[in-house]
Length: 126
Image (tube, rainbow, N blue to C red; front, side, top):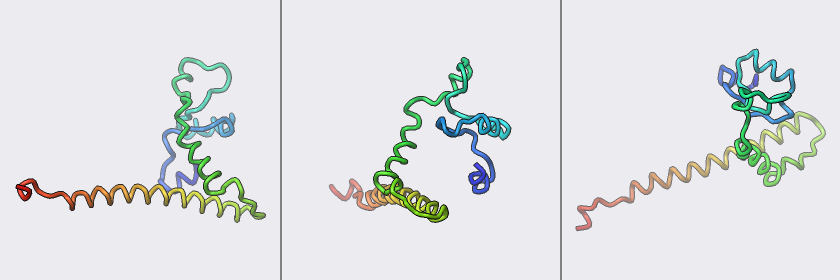
């Protein structure tokens, strides 16, 4: 969260989190900062808490990216001895994931711009 704040100058409005992140301490900190937590509530859920619950498919894209990083790019096979080395490997894998996504979007947009150049006016066909 602090890295997000340093990068963008503010905290996010909402956080999607799994059970591991949703400790009482983290919930209290998020509430103090005014950040909405979308996660399973502690204890018996009230009607208000049910509306903040994360639907089953909402985290699928996030979990899918973790799976892609682990299976496709070897994030689950990092065996570095030092913490800094492991963090560097993880950061590199995330960078590659982002570059692959951006490259796909760039090709898509380049294709659209090339299509505009190839369009032939209807008057020239007659």
